[in-house]
Amino acid sequence: MNGEELTEQETALYDRQIRFCKNIVLAGVGSLTLNDDNPVTEEALAANFLIPFDENMGGGGSLAGLCCDCLKDFNPMVHVSVEKGDLSSFDVDFFQKFDVVVISCCSLAAKKLVNEKCRKLSKRVAFYTVDCRDSCGEIFVDLQKYAYAKKKADETVECQLQYSSFEEAIAIPWRSLPKRVSKLYFAMRVVERFEEVERRKPGETSIEDLPKVLKLRNELCLAHSLNESQIPDSLLERLVVSTKEFPPVSAVLGGILGQEVIKAISGKGDPLKNFFFFDAVDGKGLIEDISTS
Image 1 (spheres, rainbow, N blue to C red):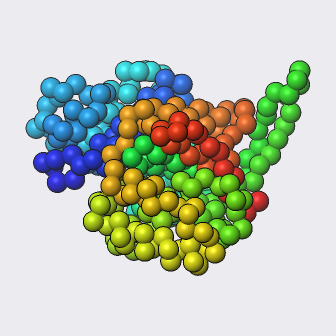
Image 2 (image 1 turned 135 degrees about the vertical axis):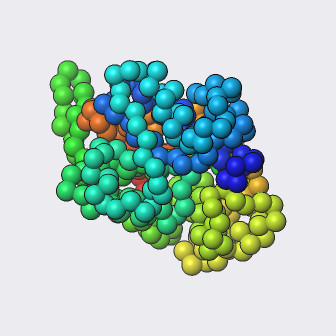
Image 3 (image 1 turned 60 degrees about the vertical axis):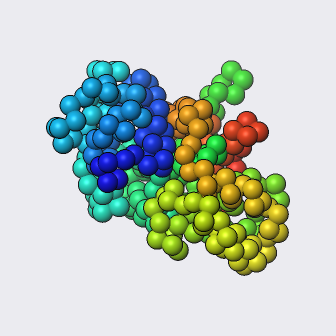
């Protein structure tokens, strides 16, 4: 961000982060660490309902810093802090102090890298990614080897699940996936790959990019032996052109993500495995198990 104007993708990112963080703080977790070094602008404050619009603009603080102060008011029992720096540059030991890591609006490389670092730790750290484009959203979950309890009839049953990493999951050949897998899964992978190839930040796409995105879609479908109709032109156009998300989608994803994090921390209840997709056009939410186990 250049400090003068809040882009559509940044507005989307802040809205989603706010809704998730508020849910987590209200739930009463022990601590919450925020990482967002973007500077404060009038546009950012207008998009962030946690911060009064008349907040001092000359203080030079970050959005994470101001959100931190406001989130503390929701639940004084929760320790809320800020960690400055580029998340991708933190070493493996940095993540040792967390039980859960959630990243949002990150590049394909960052998702793989942070997930890999979480998996290298001696303890299990739950990992989540969340992305929104237009009226569509995606959540990915990696709980590694996860044991939990759930109620069945009048007794508590111990269960266990094995998760794949993000890199492992998206590396599964498309032709080997069930025929009814969400079209949004394939479309998100195409746009994600396009941004990587073109060295774009998440959400930095426009209608001018659509021909190249469709060409990449055709190439990937050919490589994976997948019919191009599984990734409609209209869906890709929505994801490429309308990078600003709808607030209702943020509310849905933030609510579900918050519930899933609480499950991971408490070890109670059936967790999501391992992708969740939501499209406000049809109002449907789908859980897809796309994993190697």
